View 1 (cartoon, rainbow over the protein chains, first blue to last red):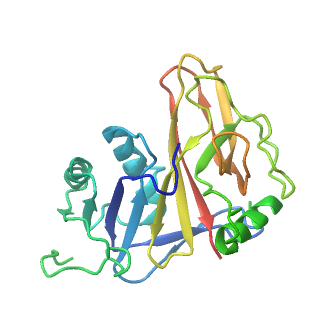
View 2 (view 1 turned 90 degrees about the vertical axis):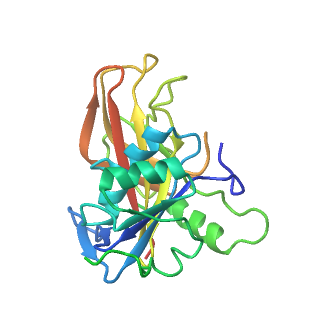
Length: 117
Length: 131
């Protein structure tokens, strides 16, 4: 199974309504706390996932995107797997970008060609 | 819930450079046991471990949003012909090995999930708070 050195498919999603889902100690319900700014959600896929399995984990209503954003769709998508990136861009109707190592470090800052919101 | 063993796990993962550093906790395991998690738990009671089944412990997908104090682990489990069905999934554990290992986190599902037939699937996302 996975090791720290194993190559994994990585997906980057431009997140313009990012949230962190917090359950305070003693609370029954989690709260969705907004995070300001234009952020990037980085996803490291489990090894061995097929294309549609990966897409499901991200787009499912109990999946990754819903757990990280209040936006219906990412502003943009990039991935080390071009086919998955294209599938997600088509599904969400969002911009497709080339993967860059500094997506996360830059906070997913928009490029000049990012559409106005 | 962060278990007591989980506190030791976090300390090792963040600060231990001795070579005994804990492996990443990226596995999700399922159980029908609905007893509230306890900090003293070190294993997932009645973990589903049917050989060849689709509901056994598996590596999850990791995700983190820059600046957030949380990260998530997401896994879709699909029941197959080896699983004992129906089953009502009530609780999950997060572990750092494909068998045995440490269980830093344990959570009741917000709503239980009934898997009745081969092909039924459960997508679960565990949100872990860092601070």
